[in-house]
Length: 224
Length: 221
Image 1: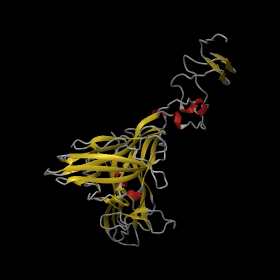
Image 2 (image 1 turned 90 degrees about the vertical axis):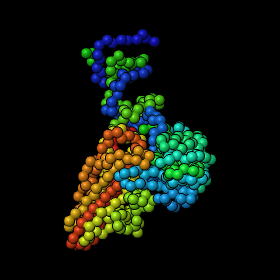
Image 3 (image 1 turned 180 degrees about the vertical axis):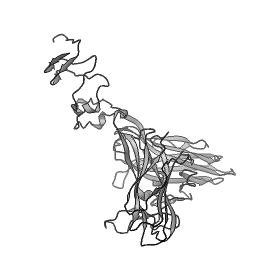
């Protein structure tokens, strides 16, 4: 191999430049104008954005065992409710309703969510709920659980992919509760069947004991 | 400066300064599989549309109820015309307001998408106007938008655009700017549209119409 040639001055090539080895542009020198209009740069060459937030609309949740029904405005029986509060003074939440002195009570809500096309196959997927208690905590317990099944698109489904156990939300300080999801075989377009379970056990509290979920997100690794 | 017609380097070609590719010469094949091009290096697109399904809109003071099929009281309606495929698409309707004054509402929620550039411009784009006849006095569309704190609380109204006159049978896009300071991807916005009308002469059917609502926000990627 010939020895390296070093040109110490600027050099302008009127025609093409080619190299048998690497032709390495200087760092941060490539601009949009250098990229061909037909470049079609593939998605996998983009940086991965970890746990990008995709909202699961609160208004999309349904009665868990009757998907033809919206969540009720007033939670009852085993159904969580969608409570809007007074517009301009409160934001909508999914609510358990007042369960003071109601004993052990479990209420649910269900939604269908499709993993976005930019999801990086098999990478991290998690479900994050912002949740806590309103007015008073339960004297015994209040927990939130998430179940996540992937539809097989033929009426059948996977096993429960959520690997995180129910978490306590028995605090007046709301917090993000993260539920990990097994992402083996997960791809963009996968359809997830989600169910929230709020379990409150209060026996003696005299003021309102209300569990609330203020936001639900599917967070997943994506590439732009 | 040395100028030569062509150059072939048998080995590597590098530069201590700038080795500039020709314009429009870089193809996918030139980009390393592990390039990991950051989103921040992609071009920003202004007012990329984020659709808001008008079928998801709710009664403004009862989120457990879908919009009714016919406008009444203070509620706007979702109008399907009951005849799919007959040249009419679904729309939010104020009902026939000929000869009366009305204030009618509908409420919805939308989240800022992951590709939203933090703090960048956001607006709501609403296609609105009147079907058949415009009212002889007034027809306005107003919008209120609040950011949810995800704990049942909110901030102040983010909309900076005043109500817009839609008393026209030309249905067109009406833009409502919102204060985007502090907004980030994933933020939940709680919004309400308000159609106010007044008509005296009742010169035939006059129906305020919202044909679509979308969020326009600046994105990268």
